[in-house]
Length: 127
Image 1 (tube, helix red, strand yellow):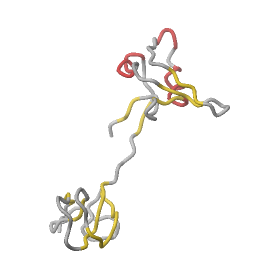
Image 2: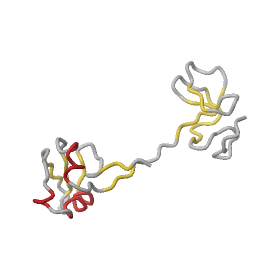
Image 3: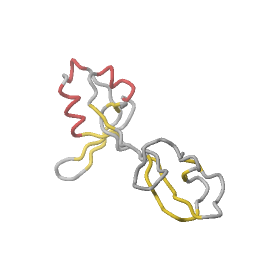
Image 4: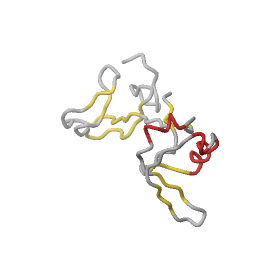
């Protein structure tokens, strides 16, 4: 067995993974625990029952754009905000000027707006 930390109280589940199903037939494309305690992608349907595991996906975190230059790569994207009456207003791609809008626009947009794919109006933070 691997010397990696264990999770979910089941022997062999490495840190960063969690148990999806215990004791069932594994299907192609799922992960199970190898004899060495490592996650293994199943390339064929298992003949016996295995512990199916999945990687724990950490949600992305965001922060406001710091200025118009940082926003530049995103200015071609549509965005929206939900109004107080519950309606959703969509806005076309736009460019911004720090002189025209001031620094507070970035924090305000981050708190109230989203791009059309649902991501926050800001920059993803790599952790």
